[in-house]
Image 1 (tube, rainbow, N blue to C red):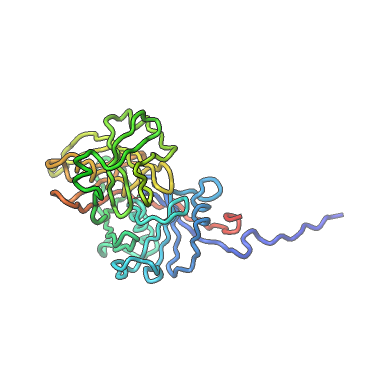
Image 2: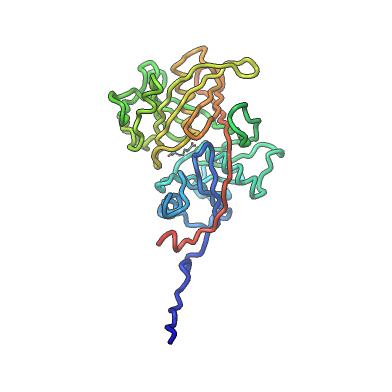
Length: 325
Ligand SMILES: N[C@@H](CCC[C@H](N)C(=O)O)C(=O)O
């Protein structure tokens, strides 16, 4: 006698599927979703599940491609852009900007046939304002992946000259390091606190499995960069460039392999500490690769360009019912 097998509804019943792409910039990794018409309900729970490295695809953040016209709270200056990068951290929180993510977003638009680098800069709407992306040559010695450069806008030190003169405007307690270190607040559209360490040994010793404790506690939280200056070198045109090594604890994520806005914050802080004569170009070595930051010369609020690779590695179809079960 055969026993009839009960017919089960498919796991995806009711919720359906969503197509996603996986990409990274210096191993800061993202799930990208094409939601041009703004139809997807991007809840914090959906973001957390997609970014979960065991139950989902795994990523440091979610990037939603959406027409700017479908983003009701898009900043006024982004209204002229066609496309908006809606960025969410792995914990489901919304972030203003992602420097690695905006390059990967540009690569995604290129893949979808929505932008061709040879036609000119891509203007991307973000919660920090408009960011222009263009293709650039790959510097020698950083691998074969093609690079994009992003105009990251102004970089400010909210504590101003007083904070700089005092060595910082925050006290930062980092796991694994015996004494509290001074931190300098830097705004790259999103908040950062940069801690310059004296030795590479401290950078290795730092325990970033726990968030560094920043005092006073920043109102919106902060990304924390630990940085060690490695020295200066010459660019092919003879201009000086600085080099630093960095680790980062990202707000809403934890330690990541790279952070583009963090690299900009680190370069701006190290140049500001260095004073007149410090280089304008900085190579920032992160666990996931190398980024280049170019700051406008002179004192005052610099404008930054961030350059680095952007790679798409996979496409997948996600069963939403199984993901959210
Ligand atoms: N990894 C990003 C920054 C992502 C947002 C950040 N965690 C925040 O909450 O501000 C980058 O490359 O800049």
